[in-house]
Each structure stands twice: as structure tokens, then as C-alpha cells.
Image (tube, rainbow, N blue to C red; front, side, top):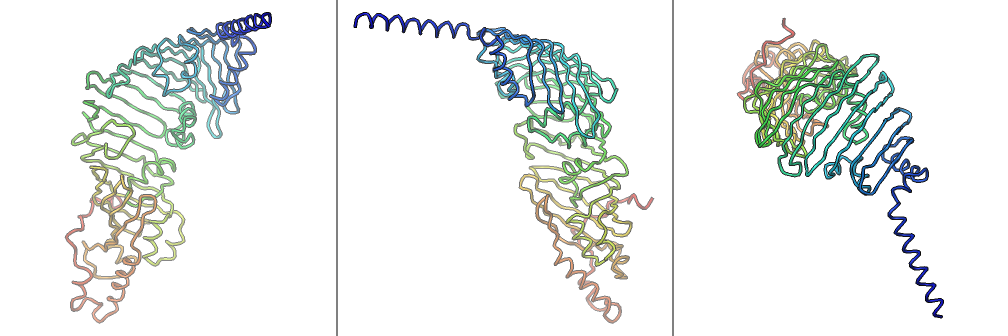
Length: 478
């Protein structure tokens, strides 16, 4: 019995020693072929690619080193000459999680990165000779990125430097300067789609194949500046602003020129044009201008429409080809014209829309429009972006009543008002009320004297004081 007890003690000691040795040499074990397979499997799950590593060196307290890393799937091929991270082994997972990356302390470097992207209906693109370095320390970070790019045999470049400090405070300080020239949109779109931030196809359609972004953003001691210019095949934008206590104001008017695409129509026009039309094609680029006066953007996360205040904005969509959706179809149905009702697409010519935004409610002035070279209408009212509610008016002008419905002797400034409620995605036109008003007008014209004797004209066609004046000059009259 004593001998067995002695053997048990030796066995327990041996097992404890083995466990200690295993723990001590665990990073070296992971650096072997068997360990590399485990790490490769972990990388593949994180990146959704097939991965391979030629050389791996791990240690408990760092640095962690990887050489000749390759990643590949059907739409992506990438390779990295060397990766080095001066972080403990148990923090390695945080390197591939942006939300946790800011909690690390240490240096990180990537050298010789080459990444090639492919997508349907988009020319292949690549990032080449990518070099990146990050120094993370006590809630602060210094970083640099540099690369060459290629999109359909067109060369571009990437150069970004910056510092972020006091990251965990309510208002961190930062200074970022960048020059991104002819950068392949596919590379950015692929990352944003992978993080579920944005649709890859939509971003490619809105921006185009490449984009250029240059300028700087600084914020130190609760104040700073934001000076950026953006250019792409589908648009241009420029912002010159000041930052003060997490509020962005404008020094100069914000200007953006955008080429209409179905994706842009879905993202932008569905919330900004009072008829909620889905554009198919624009004759000219859309012009958006926001004046500096009374503009405020509170830089809060997540974004809320209450965080934006616009004193005066102008959206000029010009002449666009629109799908005959629910709102447009409802409007056309009131005119009882079979030709317009059968039309799947209709050209609509708009006057500029002047608007302001306060407390999440967009107040739109009167916007006049000409549809199919025959129907003149106008809209005005409020769009509650926070609660997704409409309180608007669609108006048929005197010209439409005379030319389309053959109602003669209509006062020039008369507008037949029809309420429009519902939501942005499902606007609801008061078709029954509009049809009743039109029926009354049509019935009146068949009465003796054309319906204009007695009090009928006072009943149906007196101009109302709450109808805004027309948005002249009308572009279709030039």
C-alpha cells in the first residue's frame, strides 16, 4: 500500500509536470504543422476563405509572426509577405475584430499585401504593395497605410496617416489625413458587405468603379475641421466644415452632384422627393446643395434624423424617367386616361425642391412638375423622417384640369388639392376624395352656363390661401 501511494504521488507529479510543460510550450506547439492547421482553420472561419501559412511563430507574450499568408475564394485572392503583432497570444483573436482592436496595446504591421477582387459585371481590381502599421497604446492609436491600386488597367494609390487618442472618452481626439486616388470601389464594397454595413452591388452602382477622396479631418480639444473632396464616375461632393463639441457646421455650402441610378434612387430619392418616385434614368446629374446657415450635424452614434438640422437645402433632380409606381399610378388614375394608365415608365420634369429639416421633420416648399409632357402637378408639405409619416398635398394645376380633363374657364392660379399621407415606402393618396372633387368639377361643367353660374365657381374654384405660389420659372417653358 505504501508503495502504491508513493507511485501515485510520482504519477501526479509527472502529470502536473507534463501539463506545465504543455502550457509553457503551447505557442511552440501551435507553431508546428499541427498547430498551423488549427490556426488556418481559425482564419478561414473568420475570413470565409481558404487559407495557408508558410511560416508561423507564436509566443505567449509576443510578438506573433506570420509569413507567406495566402487567402482565396471564388471572388478573392490575397497574399501577405509578413504579419507581426506585438500582442499576447490570448489577444490574437481581437486583431480580426474591429470592435475589440481598440482595446489592444502593442504594435501591428503588415508588409507586402497583394489583394485581388472579382465580381460579376465589374472589372477586376487589386490592392498591391500594401503596407500598414498601427501602434496601439492606452486608448490611442497611430497608424499609416499605403498601397498601389489597379482597376481595369487604371493605376491608383492609397495613402492615409492619422492619430486617435482618448478613444474611450465621450469625444476622442483625432487627426487623419488621406489621399485616395482612383481607389477600386469593389475593394471597399466587399469589406462593407462582409461586415453587413452596406450592399456590395448598391455601393458599386451608386459610386461607380473607382473613387477619389482627398482631405483631412481633425478634432482636438473639442474643436477641429473637416475638409474633404470626393470624386467618382457617378458623382462629386465637397465639404468644408468646422467641428465643435461633436457638432459639424459648414463654412461653405455643401455641394454634391450625383448621377441617378436605381440604387441611388432607392437610397436617396425615396426619402427626399415628395412623390417618392423610383427613378430609372436622369437626363442630367442631380444637384444637391445645403447652405451653411442654420446647418448642424450632431455626430452621435447611431445616427438619428434628429441629429441633423438644415436651414435651407436645394435638390434639383431635373428631368427623370420614372417607374409608374403606386403614388404616380394613383395620381394618373384620377385623370381617367387609359394611355397614361398603361404606361410603365413616364418622364417627369421637376422644378428645384427647396426644403429644410428640423427635429427630424423635412418641410418641403412647393415643387412643380410636368409628367409625360401633359400632366402638370405640384406637391408640398412635411415628411416626418423619424416616425416615417407623410403630411403632404398633391395638387393638380389649372393647366391639367383644362388640358387633360377638359374643364374650361379654370382660374389660372387654381390648384385642386389632394391629401397624401401614409409612409415614405407606402405613400397613400386620398384617391376617393380626389375623385369626388374631380367628379364634381366635371358635373359642374355640364350645368347651364357651363356650371359657372350662381355659386358653383365659389364652391369649387376659389383659390385657397394655403396653396403656395408656383415654383417659377418652369424649366419646360424655356
